[in-house]
Length: 83
Image 1 (spheres, rainbow, N blue to C red):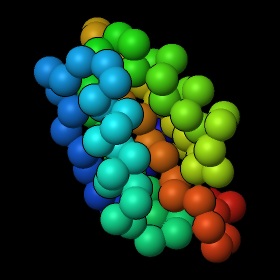
Image 2 (image 1 turned 90 degrees about the vertical axis):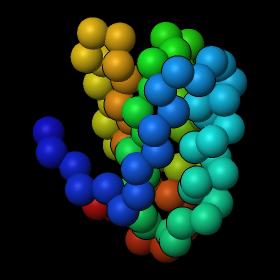
Image 3 (image 1 turned 45 degrees about the horizontal axis):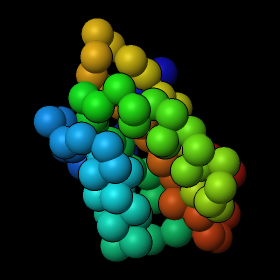
Image 4 (image 1 turned 90 degrees about the horizontal axis):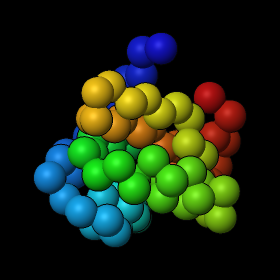
């Protein structure tokens, strides 16, 4: 699946909980409906991003694990986010 993010966040090399904290900061600076791509290498981020999306209004559009490099696509809540 191909995604065209509005913003990319490179969180490689950061340990839990920093990838998620940096993603929250990035989302706060974005407009409703925009797409954030996060690249991380912390294995715990797989669980963290899933939990975050479940507990927040933001939507985890997709995620992938490519040999220990994790990519997440989050759609910022608000407005019409049904893309």
